Image 1: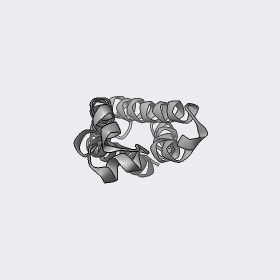
Image 2 (image 1 turned 120 degrees about the vertical axis):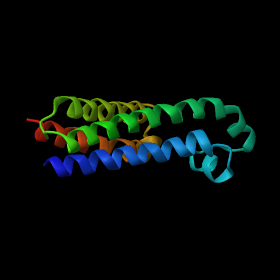
Image 3 (image 1 turned 30 degrees about the vertical axis):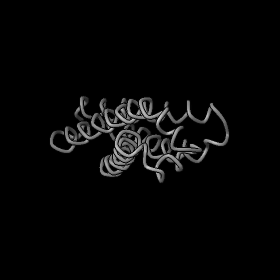
Image 4 (image 1 turned 60 degrees about the vertical axis):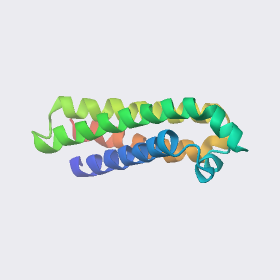
Length: 130
């Protein structure tokens, strides 16, 4: 179960690194802002500071998850520090997905992409850590 959990946490982390890239580094590119449902370059320019900030939140959650994965993988697999980092960071990703879906059903796909790997990582981590 440990390997499954670490792989799922890794998938969640990699997705959040991708979100960081899209929101903080390429937000003003038409392909990116259209992906996020914006209507114009002006809208992208207006929302760029918010997206930049949000991207870094995603990066920080990914870093916390990756550090947790490394701590578990390089130490005793019952290491509470590593599992705590994974559960906290992936739990935060899951909570953010729930907040996203609460804003409207049109965000269900995005919330699932963000939340399902995190949910699976949390559940399998709690099982593996016990």
